Image (tube, rainbow over all chains, first blue to last red; front, side):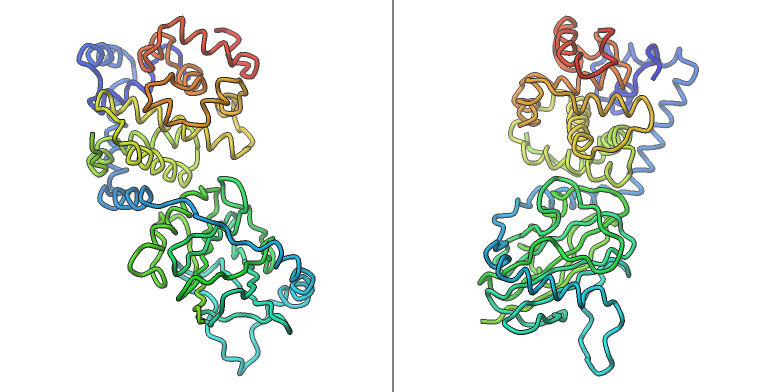
Length: 258
Length: 159
């Protein structure tokens, strides 16, 4: 920071054409007298073009509008009671089975668990705790109200992640991180169970879980807003979250049946 | 005033993104924060006037970024980043109350946050006069506001 140099703040306003005339003239005189003043102005103008080329206005405006129309999650439906009942069994199951990342045995014929919307890498795993043995849930499987699901993720090289879900009522539920405004730091090793299991409610049609991940921290609100938009869109069961390309997203659909 | 977000982004989006890049030093975070700024504009368009959009957007971007810096807890890599973190995390009674509503400050014609003023002076290198003109305070008012952060921000000892 050079105290006598015209601050970037004022150069930005000058280039934007948003300074009062008298102030603009004063800043122009100052900049013209500085050794690198003209170059700094030219750099801002070049940067403007580069940014608008890389992030075109129609696309960004649409993403911003979608985010603005989104809503905060209406409710969280973690069931502490159900979790208490199921925790021992789920924990035992996770210890015994979730760390086993070997391929499924031939003939099991489970469909892929994850829709990889943007390449390979991070993925979600879902298991269901019923009266008997916990079972691994396949993508597109049927589930019922009050089924208790345990979500897990495999980081797949991503460092930060957010897990949310949308349901057939258009509601958004946040699963990871439970609190805070920034994406959770992901454990890089193995399948990592989320801290709480999740009891399905009586929302119709489907529950769709999303893992959004990136190499750097990002805003949870951005993901929640995108999910809220998708939940109210025409294709919440198959569409993508309106998020920037820097955020990778995978999803896992469970079909609801009575 | 209705907000034409595409027109505003075309005119001011790069300015906002550069501001976010400067403060956050992370491209993904900056892109995300830039969109947050325009979302805040859209959600508050009824209270937006068209006096000086670039100044408003720069101040909004500063506040959005300070909120992110406050929450990130990242280790500063140089003196400027350290100053930013000190400002973002400075704890004074005024900041605590204002932090509840960034937009209330800006759109409600309330006083600009002391932290944003500190960033303009200490990080952007603006004089007290320039800061005062941007935020609509007197120079003595800016100096007084900055003194409230003195206990937490070492660089403010000179004010």
